[in-house]
Length: 79
Image 1 (cartoon, rainbow, N blue to C red):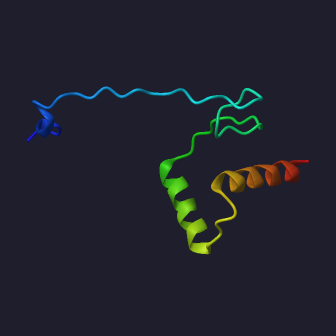
Image 2 (image 1 turned 45 degrees about the horizontal axis):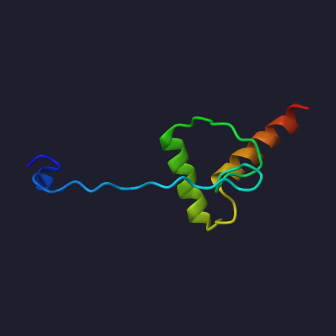
């Protein structure tokens, strides 16, 4: 059976989407005031780091914070 064959013959429902209202300062919900940039990391590396963070029970520190800390330490070493 193809993936969505069970839906054949059923009526399609239209879904109304609402736009999220921007915050008073123009940002959308969930955006911080800090400027961020996309960084690409191998999925296997990221998953291994997440496993270690969970194993240590360190829920206070996110992987993003860990990456930032490591990069700042590397910059300090070079100075």
